[in-house]
Length: 437
Image (cartoon, rainbow, N blue to C red; front, side):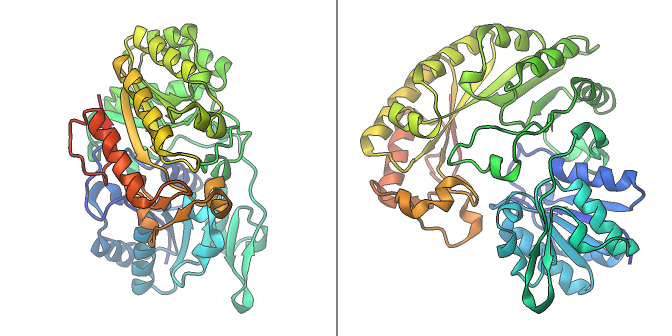
C-alpha cells in the first residue's frame, strides 16, 4: 500500500450544478503533499456526480494507505458513502475526513465506523504529518495539531487546533489534478485565504477559519493569475473570500498589480456593503472587477441590526456605486431569521424591489442553522426548531426550520410570495436557489 487518494464529496449524486469550481482546499492539500514527495490521486465528484464504482476502482488500482475526503454539511451523506465504499474495498485503508462539517462536529463524524481521523481547520500540515505517520511510521498521533482520532476503549482524542499558517509558505494549488476543461466556461476560483473578523450568527466561517489570518501576498496572487491566463486561457476569476475588501491596503496593492497584467482579466468578489466606497469600487473596476456580490441578508432594519450591523441606506449606496462602475451586482438574502415576522418579510420584499430597480440581481435562499453557528448552538433559546432529518437537507434550497413566529408552511408560502412578487423568471420551485434580475 502506498500513496494518498483525495476525494471531494459531491453536492449532488448526479452532475447538476454548472457553476461549481475546482475544490481549492483539496488542491492545496494535494500540492503540499506532492511537493514533499508523496504520490497523490485526486477526484472531484462534483464533476461527474457520486460514482462509487469509480471509488472502488481507484482504491483497487492505487492501493492507497490514506484516503482524505472533503465534506461540507450538505455533502456529508455523500462523503459517508465514499468512506463506506473505501472500507468495503480495503478495510486497512485509513480514512481522514476534513472540511466544514467535520471541523465543526468532529466527535459526531468520528462516531462513524468508516472514519478513522478528522482534520480540523487547515488541512495542509495536518495531512502531511498524518501521511508521514501512516506511510512512513514517523511521529505520534497525539503530536499532530488539528487532528482528531479514535483512542483506546472507544474514546475520541481531540488534539490542539493548529494556528493559521502563513499562506505564502504553501505552493500554488495543484490545479493540474482538477483540469479546467472539467468545469464550465473559461473561469475558475481563487482565494486570498483571508479570514473573517465578523461573527454573524448564521455563518460558520469564523468557526471553521478562526480570525486573524494572514493574507496571501498580492505578488503571489498576481503570479498565480498570470499563470492561469498563460497556461489555461482563463478569462474570469472569482475570489471566494467572504470579505475581499476588508483589508483595503492589501486590496489596493493587488489592484495595482492587476493593472500590469499583459492580458486584461475579468474578475469578481464578495464583500459587505460597509466595506466599500466609491473610490475603491472605481479602482476595482479599472483593474478588471466586473461582478460583485454583497451579503445583505434582510431588508428589515430591525433584523439587520440584530444579525448584520449594517444600514439599508448603506446597501442602496453600495449597489448604486457599483452600478455606476458598470459592475454586475448581486445581493444575497435569506429567509427567515429568528425574529422575522410576516411584516418584516414583507419589508424585505419591498427592499428587494428597490435594489432590483437599481439594477442588482437578487439571490434568495432559506436560512440554514449550520453546525457551529450561533443559530445552531442556541437554537432552542432563539425559538428555532430544526426539522431536517438528514444533513443533506442543509443546503439553503430547502426550508428546514420553523421559528417562534412562523411555521414551516408559513415560511414557504412567504418565500413563494416574495418570489412571485419579484417576477422570478424561472421555476417557482422553492427547492431551488432563486435568482432573478
